[in-house]
Length: 495
Image (tube, rainbow, N blue to C red; front, side, top):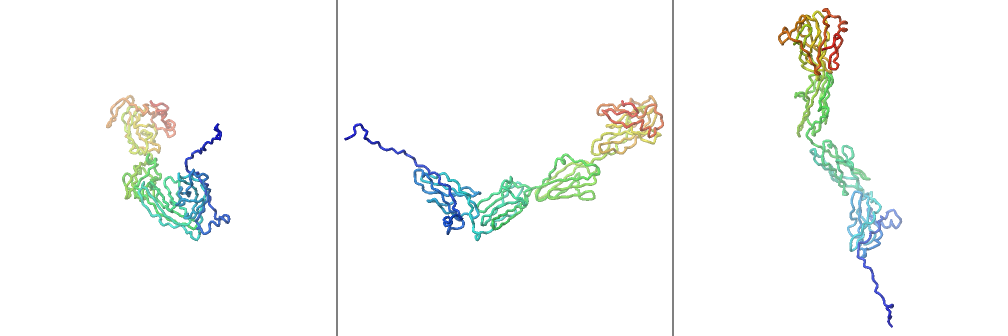
């Protein structure tokens, strides 16, 4: 009988639908060691020395559709991931051959089904491929380096190809110094095929020199080298002190050094005021690969002026010029002349020295001698080419001379003035260029600070006999320029 209340009826079973997807990753591959247990050693019987046996665990989930196979990938420290075997592997073990002896590899596995590839497994432990010493050989360059010439700022590349078992390591050198991977200007590129290159994107003059490549493995080493020649037009290099000008003292050794660049090395010539210089009694010239030196000794005033260096090569020409000053005391100033005469004063004027000694005249020293004396005394000093001397003895006759001073010394005394006859008391005369007889009002000399300068030579009531050397020293102390006013010579102040 049927169940009237429906309790005996059965409901259909439902199974949730799960779409197909990629498999999960397989286990991390393990390299079977050659020196392992007896079973592991047995696995390598009749296999070449470069063979590697990999084993891994199958993927625990196939993605809802059967796993078709596995992909084996390898990588070296210098390369990216690539396939280690050209076809898919059906099993969870593979023997790899054709690997480079001495090279270190890591491996990983991907599973795949009809949907696609799994994510990669973990990486194996690094494994170095053994090599058979009977088949090993030292490095040999199948393509070596060649001498290269480039223009400055050009790109240059050196390429070598090397063979050897085990694969050799390659080092690059510039003039015995190794070129590192982090060199800012020279880039080293290597690949697994035994090719290596050195790239210099913008060659500079200092890059010229020997380029060397050394390949080394456990069996031996090989070297190839070449010379890099960087050609550039000549260029002189002046330091700041040369641009500002150089100062030497009379009698010094003038030593001028100019650095330069340029390949091939340029011809060098020195000039002074556009006249070419050659080594001689007072001149020495020394020229190296990147410098030239001119020595002049002892220095004299005639050595002052413009010096220049000319650099010439088949690629061009360059010239550098600079000024040299040879400092000394000034030459003698001009002969003093009287432009105004009174009974007790005289105004003198003179010309500056023809040569100031290489720097500014700091003062003129006026000396005087009275008729009947046999000595010269200092009257005063001034920065100008004119001075008013006062408090002279009326009716007397004087002669004057001038010395010029600069920071490097004083000149000899200049030419002596013509005798100057002071007028009798209360008479005056204005002197033109050709006359000493016309009267005029005494004039004052104003210095650069608008300070009136007057010189007290002798008090008006001084006796006409010349003072002794001691008396002259006591009566006429050495004057100094202080605050724009000259001190008195006879106890008074200049007006």
